[in-house]
Length: 418
Image 1 (spheres, rainbow, N blue to C red):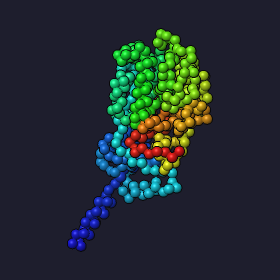
Image 2: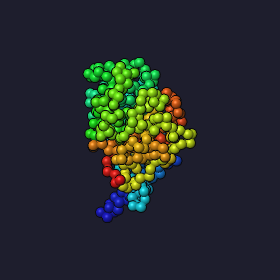
Image 3: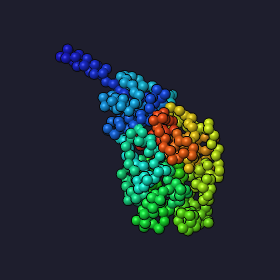
Image 4: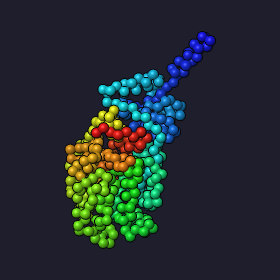
C-alpha cells in the first residue's frame, strides 16, 4: 500500500511537471500585437478561460497549454512562450503583490460582435475602410454587419458589442454628398419610407435611440470618429429640425441651438452646432476639436497620452488602455478628437493631449461605452478612401486600443473606484 501511494504521488508530480501554460507577451517581443488579440478571441470562442495580465509585459495573455492554441499561434505568426505551471503561478504571485500596479483578469465567453455600417446595403466605398472593420479582419475576429433596418427591427438584442464609425446620425449624409454614392442615399431613403419616416433624419434619430437603449440595457458600445459625435447630436436634437434644405428639402429651425437637450446625450454637453459649410463643409458641432478651423494638433509630431490607472482598483480603464506604448501618434478624422469643454464631467478621459480629449469611457444604465476620436490610427491625413494595410502596422498602439475594447466585454464587470 505504501509503495502504491508513493507511486501515485510520483505520477502526480510528473504530471504536474509536464503541465504547461502558454504566455502570449504583448511587449516589444511580440511579433504581431494585433493578431495576438485574434488568438485571445480564438481561445474564448472555444469556451476556454484566458488570463489577461494587466500591465504585465504590455498586457500579456496566459492560458493553459493546448496543442491547438500553440498551432494557431504559429499559423498566425504570434509570439508565445511555453512555460511551466510553476512559472505561471510565479507570474500570478508577482502580479498579486499589493504594491505592484498589475492585475490578472479572467476573460470568459467571447463577445458577439456587430458593426453598424452602410456596407450592409450599398457599395459605401468611403465606409468600407472603417478602422474597426480593418482591425477585426486582420486579427481574424469574426463579426456581423447591421445597418438601419436591422436595428429598427430589434436585431441588436442578438449581440454584446456594437461599433459605430464614420456615420452621420443627424441625417445629413456626412455633410458631404460627394462622399455618399447615389446608392447609399437611395438605400437610406428607402429604409426610411419602409418604416414610415418622412425624412432620413427622423429614421436616423430612431436608430440612435435604439443604439442608446442597447447600451443602457447592458450592451457595450464602441464608437469612433463622426459616429460618436453625431449620435449625441441626434439625441440632443430630438424633436428639433437641424437639417438644412440641401439634404431634406426644408430649412433647419433657426432656434435649434437653444432647443438642444443635453440631458439626452451619452458623452457630450454644451456644444454648439456648426452651420452647414463650416470647417471644410463637414463639421457638425464644437464637439469636434477641428470645428471652426481649429487644428491645434495638426503637426507631424503631435501625440496624445494614455493615462496610467490603478490596475487593482480601476480595473476597467486599465484594461482599455493596455498597450506597449503610452504616447500615441495623433490621427485625423471627420471628428478628429473631442473638445475638452464639451465632455460631460462624469465621463472618464483615458487618453488626451493638451488641445483635446481623444479616448473616453462611461457607463449608461447597465451598459458601458467607449468613444475614440479619429478615423484611422495609421491613416494618412486626407486619404480617407485609402485602406490601411495592417500588415505594415502589426504593432500599432492606436489599433491596440480598438482591440482592447473587443476583449473587454469578456471580463467580469467590476466597478471602478474613481
